[in-house]
Length: 307
Image (cartoon, rainbow, N blue to C red; front, side):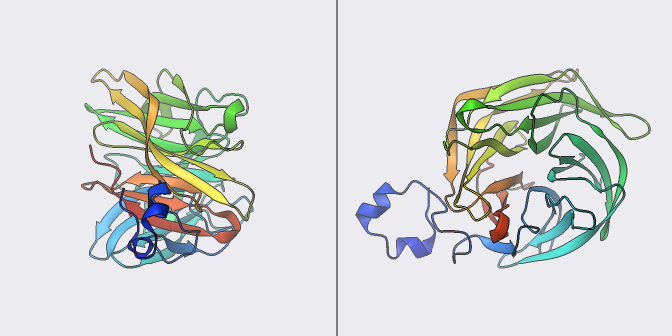
């Protein structure tokens, strides 16, 4: 995989042969990562594509803040050479620890955002305001589950959702959940039969590794999963994005998930804690966002989403 240009100018051939990472520099270095937040309250915990403009791609990003009045949502315009961050006003019951957000296919301006303990918030975003129109728990919440990921799949005229308990090191694999998704007339998400699959990240392999820190699904049904590890609020951090498997939704609404026995690592990112992965429509690019705790948040794109 191609290394950042600044590295290739000074790495010796011997050292380069040892490098397997895409993002080898620490957070804040002058490479393909761009800083979008400077403290623990401004990291990127999840992202959803909102639309495209002449200035670039607009994405809604969630922050895992927990206190009343702290920002829950921002809009990032990811342009050719810069990123513009703008606050979004949260109108409604405040969530604790938002970790993921996803656009609802076919309903412009509507999103589902997920908090770590499994509460789903349905949002209507207009301009600089996000209004909560409904909130309810996920189905089949497992003991000790801690969620950092959520994705919606649209295939054959049907919707399905996938989400995951993040797991923790060798003693707790991630659990990927999937179910058909519909909406009640009053707006509440409704779930079909839930399937579960255990998942262990191939990298990183630290004791506290979060095997799934976010997921995104390509148009063909490939599941890309980020994994992350950290040694505390000041790091060091480590993460990767892997090809985790595939999800399909049949015309009758049946959801099938097949996870890879040996997931293919698409990129390693030492120095960063990726918590947001979002495939950009009409592109092979994935938008990546980090929540690097006291070091803030960083974003970049990588061509990881080819069908």
